[in-house]
Length: 136
Image 1 (spheres, rainbow, N blue to C red):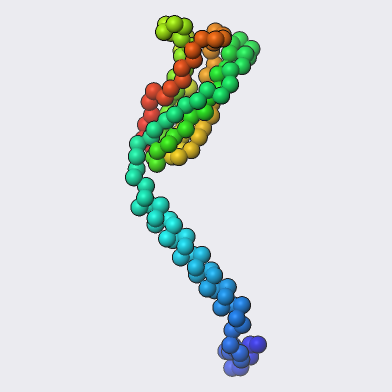
Image 2: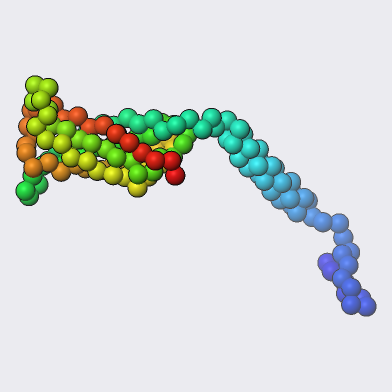
């Protein structure tokens, strides 16, 4: 209970135990978050981007064929302007190639995209790989 006298507010009782418990829990959560952020900052090695690409689906579309893929950046650094090249190979000979550029591929994450070919990849080998990036 608060009493007002001479323009000043004063408490007549000690704070309730729930106020102390809430304050302690909040302090522990803030301390845990600060510790976690600090640990993550020290743990990251700043490894350069490292990509792996997996073709997920091939589908015919009007005027050509779409090869969908997922690109994974396993490193702790983000890559910008990631160029991915897709090639249709027949017995080692390149039949067709096409490129697609990702604005960025964040660290330790996935992105997906598609390359459009004019020829049917059919049973031929389709090779999709990252060929370049810039540091953001």
